[in-house]
Length: 227
Image (cartoon, rainbow, N blue to C red):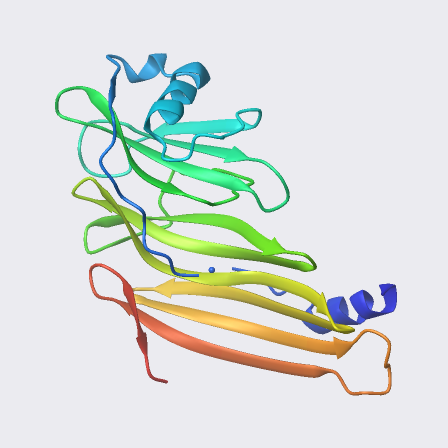
């Protein structure tokens, strides 16, 4: 296995991995009132999640959050994450309403290791686009996905997603895919490198493929362009 991983590292070098498209789950929920965003703490957010989340068996040992202005209004949004096992986690977005109450806008089953929303990654059509990387997978499979999203009229809108890194071992075959993206003006260029080889059979040639695709932002999502 060390020989396989070593070969893989040599082939890919310093490729930078950068995401799966899923529609946000948005729903009406009970709201709690808070007057000053600077007083928001983990106990307050824990109470929000317990009262507003559809899921009732959350574990709060690894709760993190950020307060930041994700859109163009004057109110701060609150983003919180919970992490559990290797691929278990949750993402929550709370928005302050006109009456001063905070409402849960969306909840996603995202395992996020680092929450960093201090600055958007870009501005397009007057919208602040943010990146969130989450991890998923299963037995022998690990996938890292980047999601680009923005706030619009009090809703979280997913503009694009793509796989940054995927590795698996199945039926004596090792598989890996690394992805990266680059945004230039209104276009998003996505690049992938795929690698396969037998775990035990060193005589069979390894499979190696590179691909690219281009998407353009239409004001809501990045639409695929035919290359």
